[in-house]
Structure formats: structure tokens, C-alpha cells
Image (cartoon, rainbow, N blue to C red; front, side, top):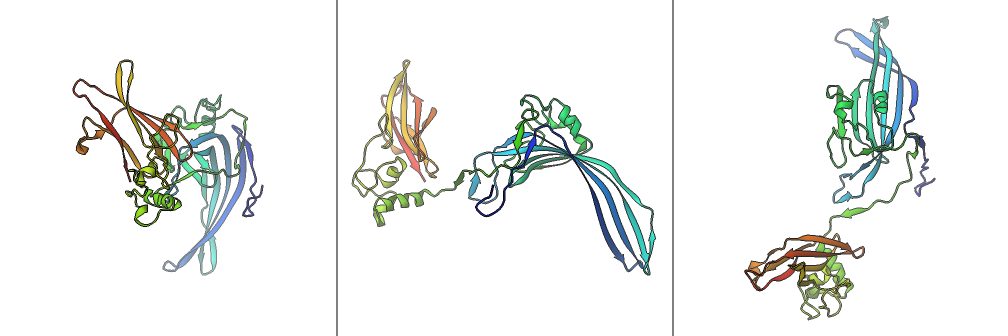
Length: 351
């Protein structure tokens, strides 16, 4: 597969639960000078490094925040869970250099030492979580009822039991947070299932911090309004409905429009009524709510029409998707007529 920017994207494959062993030699050389002591040191390190790695399964990372505010990623990422055991064994040879003459000092051993890491890796981002511990833990991890029918997780018995706390060297946790000692969001798949390690990138949804005023300005401009007529509180159509409410409730800014939302409607002012259900009376608020608009919709009620007496309504909120721009919201608030003979309701829209 070739991406639009000319970069070759190769799909690698692996099998869940299959341990892959990789060995390589590592050699490094460095020289340090100590003129105040009259000598230099040349150090040569040679080591054999063995990696035993297994893809344990996949996990869902609920949300990553890349630091590009005001943009935030809202949909989850799929992460690969990889367990790697690294075994290092080697020697370090040191030579003292005095007046150009080298003298070999006593060599020192490197290792043998073993460390194990559990990584949650997201394509294009890297390890969003890393647990690093000293010791040989790969075999206990993959034999500890981890690979079965997919119901277990990495460290299902808790990481404290899987790897004793005293042996935990470091824990790196990024993404949306979480408990470093809880891996309950890491679900495994069946042993032998083939997975695509690096699939092609998927489109992701981004939500931007929105300014309702700028959105309303655009809507007013599209409706042919300008100057004072385009202000949020203006009523250019002389129909009693300000621009901000028409924008909030999906109404026509270009023409007179004061309709009330009908039972199957997708536009209109809130419908507020008293309904009776099982001998219980409720004040029902039925209204449209614009998605990702920055507007705040609050159902309020009062037993008289004094603006100072309106309070937020209480009751279950039922939200129904209308389309890409609007939800339909219904709030039922139980009411009691024993102390009053009237209830009034409205939807308070703020920005």
C-alpha cells in the first residue's frame, strides 16, 4: 500500500501468543581523557542481547490528548499489547592509556540480566503505556491463564500479583489516565489468531472547541442578515423569535418563523406541556439541541411568571439523535398541584 505522500506502508502480521526470539550482538567503544591524572581510558563493551517478544492481544485506549488544544481526539484508539523479555550478557574491557601505551585492566561482566516490559502500543504514537520490571516474567505472564477465550486481560490477577510491587522498576502512563496497577481494559484474543500489526490509518473524529457566536454569525450571513440584524438578540423578521433561539432550535433565520416543535418535527420552539401517566402528572420539556455548538440548554420551571422564580427542572433526560447537527431532548419532571394551580416552563439558552 502506498499513501498519498509517497510513503510505503507495509502491513506486518503476527499471531497472538506466538513468542518470537531475536538475538543480536552489540559492540560499543568510548574513550575518556583525564589530563589532570595523566592518563586516558578506552572502554570496549561487547554484549549479546536476546529479545523474546509476544503480542498478547489488543486493548482499547479510550482517548488520547495530543496536546494540540483546542483539538482533542474523542474516539478510542486500538492498541497492541506486547510483552518483551530482554536478556543481556556480555563483558566490558577497559584499557588505561599512559603516554600512548595501553594497559588492559581487569575486564568486568555485563549481566546476565533480564528485564520484562508490557507495552500498550498505538500506531503512529508509540507506547502510550509501559510497565517495566526487572526479572524473567514473560513465561509466567503467558502461562498465567492469560491466553484463553478472550475474557482475560494482561495482568488479570492484577499487576501487583503478576509482578510483585518491589520488582516494578517504572510505569509510564500517558493517554487519558487510568490506574497504573489496573489492566482491566486490556482484552486478549484467542491464541493463534492472526492480527495486522500496522494497519492503514483510519479516519478519526476530531471535536473542536466551538464559539457559538461565530457559528451564529455564519448562519446569519447565510440567511442574508447583516449589521444589527445579524446580532444574537435581534428579531429581524418581526416574528418575536431572536436569532439566537432560531439558531438553537433549527429554525429559519431568513423568514418569519415562530412554529412550535411538533411530535415528528425537526424544527421549532420547545414544546412544553403537562402530561399524566399512571396518575402521575409531569411537566414535559421537548426541545431540539444543537450538537457541538457551545450553547447551553437548561429546562427551567416556575409556578408563576416572575422571571426571578424560575429554577432548573429535575427529571430523566431522554436524548434521540435527529441528524448530524441536532438531538431531540425530552425531560419529564414530576409535579404536584396540591400547593399550586399552575406550572410554567421554558428552555434557557446561553452562550
